[in-house]
Length: 324
Image (cartoon, one colour):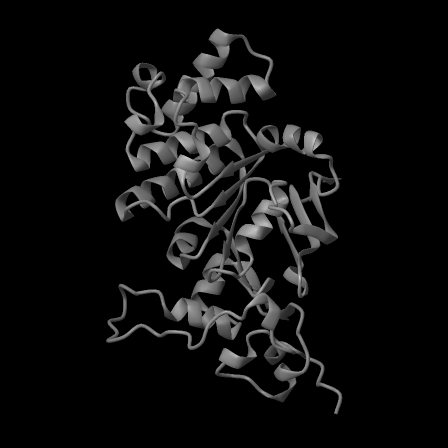
């Protein structure tokens, strides 16, 4: 059984002009110890999917369909109080900006020990020792001496390590990491990526890694889900998607990654822009930008279809011809 099982997740936002569907029948699973990368342009629905899983969907957005199961038990229909108990203990969250996660007026030690004691029955001394252990685990030098320091006394990369420690200190089984490396320089990014991989490997932790950076996904994930306009358009083993993408949108994303093996004068770019939620085209939502578009794409929306090692929401892989 998968640790996380998302089935037909649908999220809508009511507006004065009607309902906007931001997540449209998204399904995927994450196995124990697996890192699933979720990639796509801004507005694809990646962060909303993550927020739905951890129960932090901003109003007026709401889940209107589907189910989210953690270890076989539904969590999408829990009360806010019961969801708070799940968040932290069973699901950890790492966000892009450490300053929005950390309280600037509290020492990192007090924030860690409070989180630990919220979810685990430990004395003050035991919680403090556990906090120090986690700071050491995420690579904070001199953790015992720095545990009473405040967030502003750490560099950006070190703050992000503290945020990771905060997400992991109650030892959750699943971590949702939303753009955890975006605000960091490249050398620090590499360290954080290596840290997430090591923690997943050593603690059997599952990770949902949300990013717009396909390079980060290629370095970190076991599988990848490519999102476009609120849907998954391709999902499969990361190297298959990187080397042999099947969906035309995935091909465009891969073509925009610089390669060390082949010198090119210009990187490929995807013409056009992601459609607004109130203007998603009929048929395949990618059809106005797709170089392989044909008539069926403009009238029928494809679901995920088998495309070799991956699944792709593209009519190119439909084994049954369209009705004439």
